[in-house]
Length: 217
View 1 (cartoon, one colour):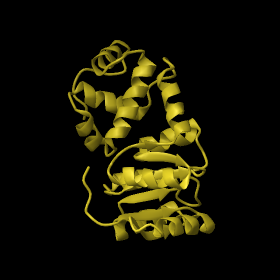
View 2 (spheres, one colour):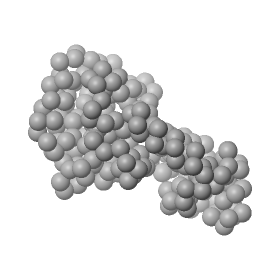
View 3 (cartoon, one colour):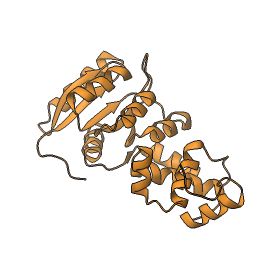
View 4 (spheres, helix red, strand yellow):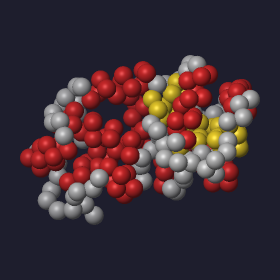
């Protein structure tokens, strides 16, 4: 993905002022970045994203009022162009998967080295998916464990669009999520159904009654 020339515009969302100040100062020292705003909760992050048009939003998950996952979902619903990079201390399935499903481009932990964080924001600004090693390992373990549970509502929606002939890009546009998120859902679907590709997933879903004939609404 190409982005406009100039500094990467960054919005920092975290409920701890010391963390916000530290992150803002770190990025402000590098001419490649421009910090355009700081938010103390999800609702403020959504508002500032609309007002400042950042390229990347660094989003904490646990914040008072509107939390990070809800804010990511709202930004996705509004069609915000900014890429959301989660920066948190939590790497459990109950935190990682909802954030990615809501539309996050990447997921990093707060113990990430400065150089890694700078690289991640650069990558996110160009539309690349970014995952910390522990999060990537957790997702791969889920993919490698077949029959890990029934398909989620969003996984069924993705599979319906695949069955209707949608590409990953078109499915992402229809569901207001990123292509990387669609790919993650497909990997989870393959693992749960014990298959290895899109066609086999669709066939197995019909066999199990998870899909019914006809295009999605």
